[in-house]
Amino acid sequence: MFNKLLKRMADTETVIENNERVYAAAAQKVPEHIAIIMDGNGRWAKKRSLPRVAGHHEGMKTVRKITKLANELGVSYLTLYAFSTENWKRPKMEVDFLMRLPEEFLSVFLPELIEENVRVEMMGYHHNLPAHTIEAVRKAKEATKDNTGLVLNFALNYGSRAEIVDAVKNIAAQVAAGTLDISEITEEHITTGLMSCDMPEPDLLIRTSGEVRLSNFMLWQLAYTEFWFTETLWPDFGEESLLEAIENYQKRNRRFGGLKGEEAN
Ligand code: V07
Image 1: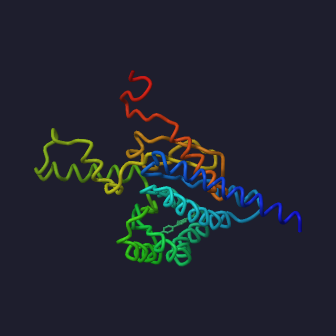
Image 2: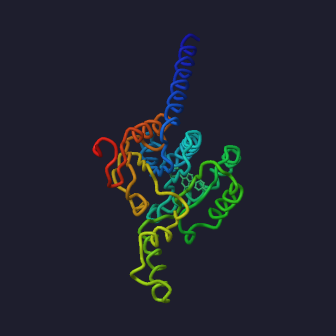
């Protein structure tokens, strides 16, 4: 009885402490666009002698928590790397399971996303994706299209080099057609040819689980982004973890190649 009361007090303290951190973080410059490579779901499961898919399923709950907090903090765009074009190489059973997750996630959480004014988007290639997966995402996009809060952008069957090649092909076609001169080609032509063309570039990239690489994720868009790598596995990445990443981001002095703050004097 006494132990339970103590636990309850400790939990309440954590909630109060987190609320204070949310309030303080929201009062400063919050990253407008956060992109996350959600790694470590398989390892989380392995540590518990569970099948890898149990880790993916647990990771879905983290998506819910992090979306909610990002929205509360006033983040405008949250891009989550859910499935890469390289992930098709995984065992068929695992791929089939992953392709069911968008439906499962949305069947449980879509009402909540609507309630929270979140807009669902997807970035990635439709080809190869099962019809049921595309249909689930299409419905969610449709149901949330007029929402004005956080944009929750799932990178699904996404590969950065492929999208850059596509943007280049589009430019080449315009040159071949005589509607664009080579001398007129700018960065803007590439940027507008990417699937993220309607979003600002990410201000903060987070990768969980201790891997320190980009794995073909938003290579062009991350040119000036601040990086945050953490050993924490995605299913363990809680409110405190996102707050820690944002607090660290807020301490940094972004220069975009120029001079700002201290060194400018
Ligand atoms: C996936 C859960 C999170 C950890 C990373 C891998 C497993 C949510 C979605 C999703 C995608 C589109 C959508 C709504 C939800 C998802 C896949 C994997 C393939 F419109 N989580 N999650 N999709 N994982």
